[in-house]
Length: 115
Image 1: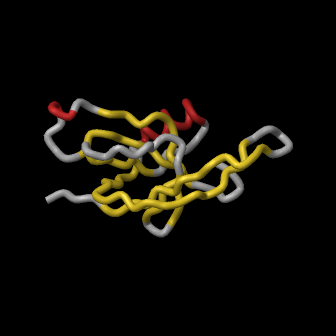
Image 2: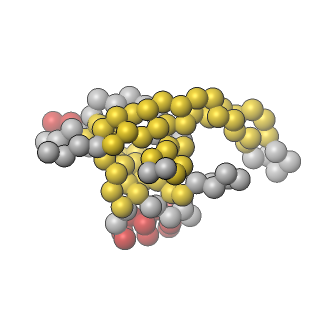
């Protein structure tokens, strides 16, 4: 039987702007989301993410059909590390997908001093 792992979403809020006009974000909370599939990104996904976003996709997350969290541009934690979601989450049609997961989100390595 296929099952996912617990992933922590780290929520952040803009608290100001730096001298270059970039947002300064502060952590406002965390929430554990259950049953998330985690798989290494394929070579095609890595290339696509790099070409579109300038980021190297490391893992692809499978999100359960009933999940309502915002997965765009958030920090997530699993495998003892913190990751940053990149790009738009891609969602399939529930009725056309036989298993419990219908949304894919790519993540890149996160560095404390920025993306």
